Image (tube, helix red, strand yellow):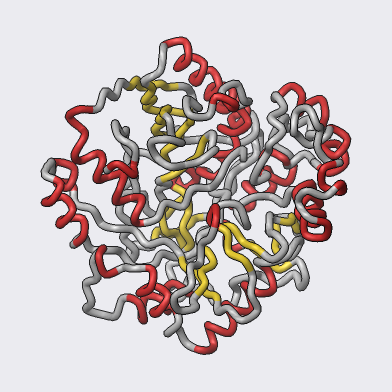
Amino acid sequence: MKTTTILLSIAFAFETIYSRAINDSKVDDPFEIVESENFVYKLHCSEGQQYCDGIKNDLDFAFNTISNTFEIYQPISFEVFVDDITLKYGFGETLAAVIDTNFVPLKTSRSRSSIPYLYPQALTKQLHLNKQPTYKDIDFTMIINNCNSLPQFKDNEIRTVIIHEMLHGFGFGSAPSVKVLNDNKADNGQKGMIFYNENDQYGFETELIPSFSKDLMEITDPDEYINKVSNTKVSKFLPFHIFDKYLVSLKTGEELFKDIPSYYKEANKVCFPRGSSLVMKDITEQYLKNCIKKISPETQDITSRIIRDNYFDFHTLGIKTYDGELIPLQTMSGQYSSGSCVSHINNPLYDEYFTRVKLYGSESDQVNEMFDSVTGKFKIEYILKYYDENYISYFSDVDDFTVEEMLELLPNNQNHPLIGDGVVKILKTLGWNEKGETGNNKILYLDESLSIPETQGFKYLIKKVYEL
């Protein structure tokens, strides 16, 4: 896997912040502030100087590519952690990921009926607002795997992975994730997969953010810390992302969430009744399932239809860009992954691969013929047949071609090397301006009724997560 969109669960937030609290005094966390024209980041890298300089060069390459594609009026601010994210944090074969993205709720008018959407802070800083929000210190956090536990990936191409992940931090990602609501049935199987069953009941869950207090980071006694975390108040469900506003059914062309734009409000009414003060220990998986099932029958019918019609088959869900083009997003036949589906552009080669697996079996000749027997990678003829210029936003890339090889092999738009036309259109639809364009004067309005705490919890560990 090239990358997985990491949607941190409350449990993982607990583990990372817990580890920070009990281990801060013991962690050797050297860092440096690196600044360029459009980007400012704090680099945490405990590797050798040569390795860390290599990562900085890779980041610079990503910055130049992005800066030559989009107008950046206010610098992007973030943190970068280079560490063994496989062994110590449980991120599997992920090479890099953007996590802890900070969002700002914005509306198109002052009207109370105007629907707020969450804009990534990196994008918000580039827009015209009626009122400047109090910005968080960073826009997002990027983690990069040093691959010490994955020596087979040590020399993999990382530049395209960094660009891919930064685009997630720029807003390329969906908020609602599919949940199985059946009692006593796990909704996430191996690698976060959900498998379709016509008898299952499905619903959506958007983000929940714990409101951790500042003094939590100063607690060193584990028992005191666990007690404080367990009794930390949990924020309500948050609105959809601006990305979700433009999701459409490829079958009908209809906006996916047009009938439930305020889904989060209805969910909050049943999951967080007025006057309630739910805390971390109350928000179990079963509690969430039970309360989502209490949403009105009308909304349940709509969400069930959306999920069944669009989330469990190929070429069912896409995004409509500002010029009317419909770009297919990644969905799979009979299964759903919260880390891969919807938040990536459809990879037609994987469609073909999964189709063959379903029809003939994973060890069949029809599947094996797609791969080079020596390298284990997809054959170049299949890459050339199925990949297009938007490959930078595919959910996976097991082939690990270099930047130079991809530019030679694939028909990338000459105006945007590496970042294809479709990706550029999607980011422009969200609000970014293409390089050389004059920004519009449209004013967006800060929704001050929504208070979103800072989502910044990732810190170095000196122990593996499962040892804490």
